[in-house]
Length: 330
Image (tube, rainbow, N blue to C red; front, side, top):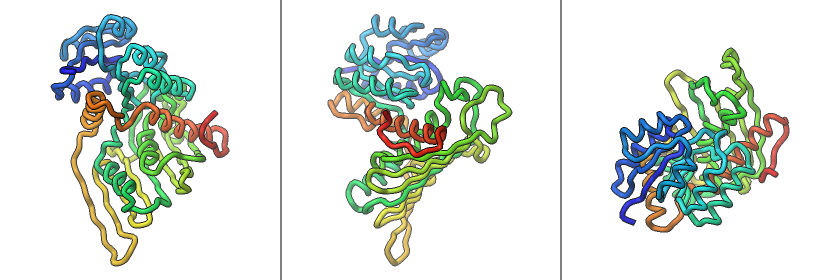
C-alpha cells in the first residue's frame, strides 16, 4: 500500500491527539471524520481535509478506508468494531473498549474472524520505563517477580458523562486502567482480585456516582502479588503514574512512564536510573501502521484490551460485593 486511508468515529479531544500524530506520517491520509455532533467533524475536516459525517455507518459505507480510529466514550460503543471488521478495515480503538465483557468479547471475535489488525489505546505500554522493564523481565535478567504496587493519583474531575458510573465505569475502568494494563503487561494475567472504593472528596458534585478513592489487591497466575491505589484527589497539577516491583535480581522504581530506577538486590548496594523522553501516542501510532504494513500483530491487539477491561471490572465488582473475584469473569 502506498497510502493508508484513515477515518475517525468520534471527534473529541483524544481524536485530536491521534490525528496530530497521524499527520506526521507519510504513510497515511485522513479522508473522513464522523461525530454525532457533525460540527465537530466539520472542524476536523477544515483542518485536516476529507469528508464529514454525522452517522459513522454512512461514513463506512461511502468511504474506502484502510483504518478506522474509534474514539468514543465507553458507553457509546455499539457495533462499530464488528461493522468495520466485516468491511476489512483495521481498527484502532480507545480504552476502555467497552463497559461489559459481552460487548468486549464480541469485538474480539469480530476482529479474529475478519483477520484485520487492531490496536487499543494503552499508550503507556510504549513508555521507556515499561518497555525496558518488559525487556529485563522477558530476558530473564530481572528474575522472577514477587511483588508489584502502583499509584494512579491525579487531581481531576469533569462534570459530564465521566462522573456517571453507568457511562464511564468509574476511575478504575476509564482512567487508572492504564496502570492496571501496564502491570498486567509486565507481570502476566491475573487470577483473583479484591477491591475497595469510596466517594470521599467530590461528593458535593451533583449526580456523581463514580469513586474518587480506591485500593485493589490482586494475585497473578504466576503467584506474584500486586496492589494499585487510585484517586482523583491528588496533588494539584500533578499526575502520578508510579509503580514499584520486587523481582529476584532487581527492585524496580518508576516515577513516570519514561524513567526507571534499578536497585540491585545483591551486595554491594547500587542503583541505576535510565530515562528517555518519548511521545507514547506517536509510538503507538507508528507501531499500528507498521503492524498493518508488515502484517504482524500490534503491541496492544484488541484481545489485550478485553483482558485489561476484565481486570478492572473484577476490581469494581469486588468493591461492590465485598468479596474476592476470580478471573475470568462469567
